Each structure stands twice: as structure tokens, then as C-alpha cells.
Length: 159
Image 1 (cartoon, rainbow, N blue to C red):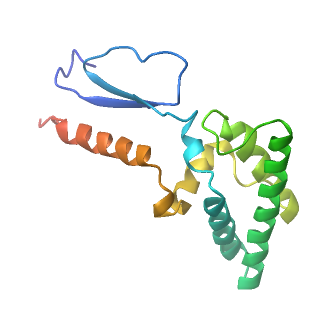
Image 2 (image 1 turned 60 degrees about the horizontal axis):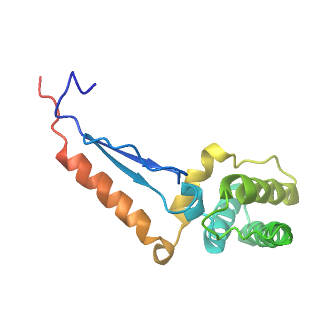
């Protein structure tokens, strides 16, 4: 693509890798300091807000939405306790939170509701809208700023 459009710019943001990023002067590259992007989306308040919002969409009565929040609280406690017995914490930077925390959490949460799991790994991005502003990690701001800067360096074709 670089041959077809020599002034092309791009950015790549990777999950944390166990190796250095390759040098590429035409591609801005970044790597999360935490294991994966999902590590920035698993705050308790984020998960509780998600559950309550989903409950409001699914249930007619507001009190039933609170039941969804309560079931999420219980599921968080259960999965955190299970991780603790393995010497792990879902808030650590090194845990693969998508597989080790979020997958069992949502499985347990929807079991409590008696529903099929409606939150697969491909949908974890939905959690981003529930992250409280004060809980957004500065690294997320840095990545978004880098994306914005890269986009403004682009020279669109005009033919």
C-alpha cells in the first residue's frame, strides 16, 4: 500500500507483547502497558453500570434492573474470590482479563439471571461506554490523542 500511496500514515496499538515493537518509520506503533485492552474495561463500577443498563432494557420495572445489578455484584465477588484462590487479581496488569475474569464473570452473571450469555468476547467493547470518566486510564487518553494526531497527518486522495 505504501507504494501506491507513499504519503500514507497509520497507527497500530497492540496488546502488551513480550518483545519489542518492530521499527517502522511509516507506522506509529504503541503497546498497552497492561496485558490487553480489556484490562482497562473491568472496573467494578463499569460492570455494575452495564448490568443495570441491560436490566433496564430487558425488564419493565426499574426494581428488576436493580436485580441485574445485584446479580452482577454477586458474580463479581464469586469470580474475584475464585481468582484470589489462584493468587490472581483482575485489576493486575498481567492477567489476561478477557479469558480469566470477564468470560467466567459474564457466564456466571447470565446463569444467575437464567439467561444465555449475551456478552461474548467480541462484544467486550460495549463496556467502554460504561467506564466512568474519572476511571479512564491516562494511557487511554494518550492512545486516543495519538490516533487523532495520526488521522490529522493523513492526506486523503482527491481524485
